[in-house]
Length: 298
Image (cartoon, one colour):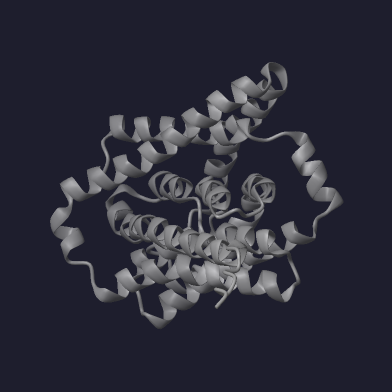
């Protein structure tokens, strides 16, 4: 699907993305989570509990073919991405919690992703299409190195460095998504035109259902409004570039296109869905804070 040069460029952008995310982190964030872990634990349980299960249910109920099912489940087991931090900010959610959950989920993903894939992906695989657990763990570890380096550099050079690195990382993440979408659509337009309704429905429902369930679980657990919004975004918005990196590096070249089709659709849908949810939250806030209109005296 991708040439060696394109693969190298996308790998570089992914490293920059992870570096930018690492620049937003400090050890104090993790210490704060340790002091007040309730919201974090609820969000993490939703992220690594609901999302992989939702992906498995959708793949089973919709009877997706093997490659589409694996692509959906890998996306469902990925940790949250930096896009959730942006939407948390726009929706007036708990941004500090969002950033901390995004960071911690990357570390937890080294253990949780292979476990979730073992349980949920096995029914769709066999000897002819095994899950390369070792390669997936290696990819996660390699992508965590830029995070650790950026954290160390932030401690050395301060906030100004952090803001610059974060901006570069965000641009790299957007560039990765655009590059993969453009390359895939240009080279394989005919294949994408043949997408069936089940594949499109699975891609649309994964993020939307994840956000809804994350919000409901957070509400049932008694979290504050801002924290509920954060948990909703962190549950439903997965790290699409990380999913692409895993599929491109861990699976054979001839199956990459089929594996990537559904995750790329998800990446498009989740931006639309998260934008709609953000608009809903902001509109509701505006209604609640609007001053009451006094009756006109007669």
